[in-house]
Image (cartoon, rainbow, N blue to C red):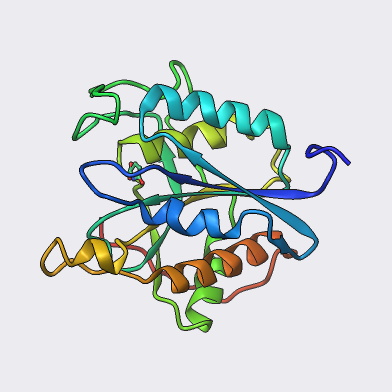
Length: 220
Ligand code: PCA
């Protein structure tokens, strides 16, 4: 069976950026590469933390794999919980240069594209599943305006005509080894993040669940 016909799910992480030695997203996503989850093979791919290269790599990966679900993962240093991102906006406004030195300001991700896309991941079910497993998580209504938001937007844009493929973005806190370099910053250890990734994938692949009304958003 080719990689296109074998049922698979896609996890992406990012390379380190902003002077960090590691990126928790790739450090954890890569550990699930090749694992079977509920009959699906996990394909893990690393995206460059660079606007142009992340866009072309994402396009290539989506062409290669035709995944049944996609969770793109990135680091949000300073956040204390797993952030299930709900909305991707059509805006790039880079606070720092990317890994190729490019710092676009006030640009659309896709010229003429919709202002925003919502995640098609079952974020509320994922939130409940994570909390049931004792893992701190929240719904976030901003993925920022940097490379993560760009990838999230492009992912939703690419899969817009495939609503049956749940796809979205999740931000993680620092790993403990990063947090010790940022006094007072919260962190989450790799084993907990890996456990969380498995739970999120299983929930994304499960039939839609009926869940009680819960609100659990960040304040930003
Ligand atoms: N976090 C950055 C880009 C790469 C990453 O892991 C962001 O939040 O945009």
